[in-house]
Image 1: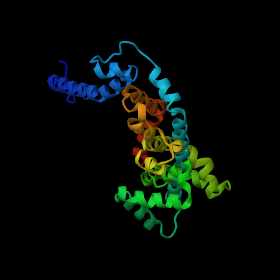
Image 2: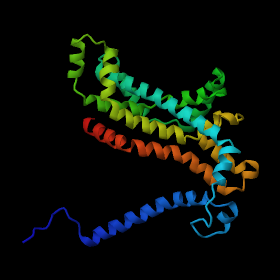
Image 3: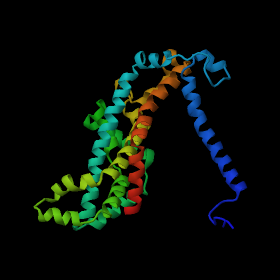
Image 4: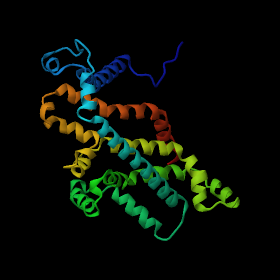
Length: 284
């Protein structure tokens, strides 16, 4: 007699779960599908047609957005800011986590406590004005460097994520390297960094996503300087940009352009992201 698996679900309950998951998937994917399909329609068809599929696919909206609205420039701005912030954030989080994980010094517990407290204290919009004032006072608001400085700062959660991973790495590596004459910094560069690659991939992806989709601060910093705008800011500004104010199909095309790099990064780094999260959870 075949014994029933105690972990198996009732067929009716299993069916209900699948139906709910399918409904949530449809609800999640429909706006994205509508945006993609709408970007291949002209504005008139987009406004009056009830069909999701365009009668005639056209790439004119993408060409118009890329060339006439200068989306090539905005894309370059976002790429420069995002990559710069990722590099600086990775250096900051990995170095700080390495010191807090491997070095014993006076005041270490106080520093870790302050970092931990800062994760639960959010000043939110209250920090926008002083941040902008500092950028204006230093002249950093006149270049992309200001956006990089803002985006690369902070990241306390990334430090704790990296530190949790490092705490699971055996200190025998450090001892063996010191016997061979390696300095503290050399151990970090030649041994710890290669071992931290999984968690570095996770942190890099999280930082890239946050910076690429950031809107409020880049919008404030680039006010009156359209040449410095990033993709999210330029996309939102399209709704009040003269003749494009009623060109919804062009706006959808512009929004999709801003999504493409993020989707590509997720596709390329998905495996690294999952492995890093899993390893960090086990080691932390």
